[in-house]
Image 1 (tube, rainbow over the protein chains, first blue to last red):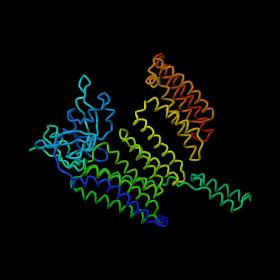
Image 2 (image 1 turned 120 degrees about the vertical axis):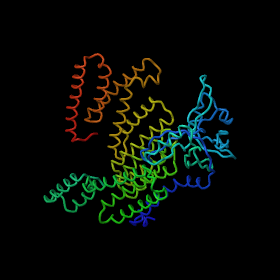
Image 3 (image 1 turned 30 degrees about the vertical axis):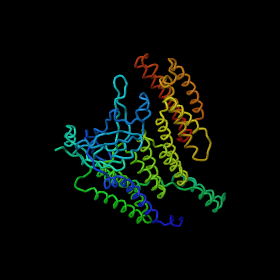
Image 4 (image 1 turned 90 degrees about the vertical axis):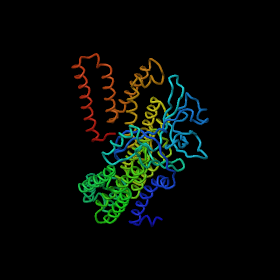
Length: 186
Length: 355
């Protein structure tokens, strides 16, 4: 092995292999999801900022981000209400979705991986509370919050999204979701 | 082997040759002595031009990826990235023997193209979130490149990427990944013959990682600052063989900065919930000032800068509202001037050493 490392060309081939492996490993999950995942539609809300490295994008929020308390599974409801934020901080949640007309909506949220049904992995963001501090729901975050668009072209799409005239097509595979595109309602 | 600047190396070489002419040392002895030193590469005009050129092209590619140009398909963009990676690495290989500087420039370029590839994939698949993972992957690739190229600039770049990764992942659980990256950097130190610059940046990563841990485990500001104060003391006083002077300099900076923060009474009040939290801060401030002055007495410059900062901080806090503005600025200026004069005298005595 040491002899191999001493060869001048070997280190260049090795670094190319390492770079290629790292880049392809990043693509593995999204590509697998695009090929094997189930396609669903969800409603979106949006605004249009810019990422210094990845360019212009539309920041998306989805209707399935807001989850009312009656959709939470019993293991989540059992957690102390006053410490809900602390108990759920950085925890992975599973959002089961079912089709209601054209779009998919939240059916139930669990702490354990669901054995059946279509679900998305998500992270807890914060709890919504009533004036009397009672929890009324939670807000979650999916890794689907950015839709990258060509430079200086996001405005028109953003305006239509703000009017509630757009939806997202996503592919879901074993809880992992990839955003395919944002489309206008007919 | 000790690394000397070009001028130091030439001076040593010249002096030893003079001693050899006087028959004080033999030619063998001269060679044996010179073998224990190496001449640092230093800044080279061509190297600077080539490196800046490589960085500009790399930034251009990053910017091109960011513009998400509609006329080129995504698969073509990916192909361009992989071809550019292969092309730059091949050019670096081909030029390594005859034009090592050009070879290095192409290595820098390939590291930036690798980064562009990461962000292109993020763009193609609309990967959301804060995406600190992008910087983790870029860091790991660049560390691999640093291991194979033994280039200090690439290694420093890897440290900067790691710092960005940790800072952008403050609200995530990156404990194991952070530990892994930090451990890799310390291993890299050995590989770079324990270069002072490497140790400085690796220590910086460790400090940022400790700050991340304090934030992640929601440790209160007071305890975080006290912890950094203790770390600073540890870095300054603990004896070990790994670039002790770097640890001492960073230790002084860390303990002085955290000490300066502990002179703020609000930080003590948050913990003790007492109206007289201010007393603790003043007592600490006086003890800390005495300690800093004891270090200044040893002709150290870093504590002198922070002694000046503490005096100015108390001066502004207590006298700004009471003194007429003209008097306030004149006295303030006089304090700074006195420190400046003393600072210059100490610096000249130490030959510019900042320890």
